[in-house]
Structure formats: C-alpha cells, structure tokens
Length: 259
Image (cartoon, rainbow, N blue to C red; front, side):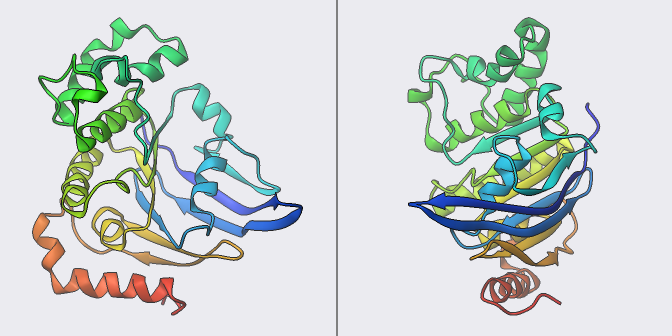
C-alpha cells in the first residue's frame, strides 16, 4: 500500500475572462489536507471548488500561489500514479468491460495490466461488483457505474484521492448508500481524500474536516471539524449531534462565521 501524501494549497489566486470581463474564481485560498485525512470542500455553485481540484490535478495553472502533493508539484505526483480522480459523470468507455474500465489508468501510464490483475480483482470485490467483471457500462445501474469509477480511481494505489461530486447525479436514497460504501472503501485505502460536494449531510458523514467556501470571489470562510468516531454507522444520520453539526455548516454557508 502506497503511503498517503499531504495536499497543501497556498494563497491560490485564479481569474478567468468571460466575454471580455475578468472573473475572480479564487482569491488567496489556502487549505492543508494532512496525509491520510478526509477533507470535504463545500460551497455554492461557482465558488471555485472544482477549480481548486483542477489546479491540484495540474489541469490548470494558478495566477498566483501553489498546490503541492507530498511537497512536490501535482505533475510529479500524477506522473508517479499517486493521484486518483472520480467525477460526477463516471465517464466509462462503453465498449470496455468493468475490468477494462478499471484498468484504464494503468494503460495510460504504460503499466502492464497483467501485473495488476490481483489488485483489479480486489477492487472489484471492494466496491461490491463481484460477478460483473465482464459487464459493459450499459448493463449497469447508475450506482454501479459510479462504483466502477471509484475503483478506477483507486487502481494505481493512489496516495491522494480527488472526488468531484461523485454522487451528485444519484437520488437521495442511493447517494446515502454510496456515502456508507465510500467510507468503507476509504477506511481500507487510507488515501488522503479531498471531496467536492454540495451535500451538507454527505460532508458531515464522510469528512474529518469541512472547508466552507463563499463565492464572488471564491474563498474559504472557515473550517468545521467533524468529531464523530469511525467507522460511522448509518444511525449517525439520525443523531441529534449530527444535525447540530449540519446546522452549523449550513449557517457557515450563509455567512455565520465558523468558530
């Protein structure tokens, strides 16, 4: 198992030009995700959550500031296969089986698939898709396709896992089930995880800490620490302490300072 890496965001500024006008997506954003931690990033649409992920993945460059993974630039971590990513759209290749879709990052990195056959089989079991190894995406439900995407994100044994609204397209019942499954998977992978989400319940159930963002310009308004012990059971969703914390996050989203 690869050791987890920390993710450090320092003073990020990012401005885009839209129809000739400058739009400040991020303004002096800093965030530290310790190795092995689970951090949720929550805020209104357009506050820059996904922009932070893009910068952390080296898909874009900041105007100022930096992102490091284990003290190195994102490109270096990606080259070593130390990062995994799952988006809201699982983006599976329709002609590839479950096994072949999970193996895609290995193919991209030029790593022999046969050497990872045991790991692929373990991941299929981990995400609960035993018996569907040869199935095509069109033969799977939405939740099953998202499980494939998460397994694909884990196939390189990443030190850091980035999740950009991975369950945003699912209904509330299935989303909660996937939250429970994701916690179980994360507890086994031990990867440093940064989750972008609009779901307050999801953030409180999954994360060690929640970074609350405000928009125009995008900035981190505060950090909410989540005190609940792991593993977190489904009964937590009905715990009064859980609801008090979701209320605190909601208030922070609407402008009440985080203490």
